[in-house]
Length: 103
Image (cartoon, rainbow, N blue to C red; front, side, top):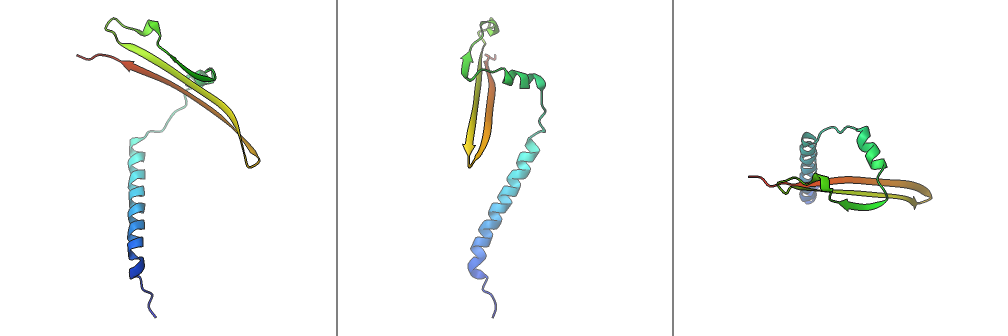
């Protein structure tokens, strides 16, 4: 007796569409990303961050045309215990926002 394939055809088409979309998205992302590098100066700066969030506007970074700079830093260092194992999470983020007027 032949196996009826018509009832599973819509499911197969949906799964194929999802797989094709995932494949296309992966290819698109790989083309637009670059291989990162490790900069020891940045690693040292992240290690020197204090715990918590800091936000400041350095006075020496203000130019005569009114352009300013805001710096932010965040560091969270926690130990998470899950199913009998301990994981140390050390998250460090440094950010800078510059706003300039263009004419």
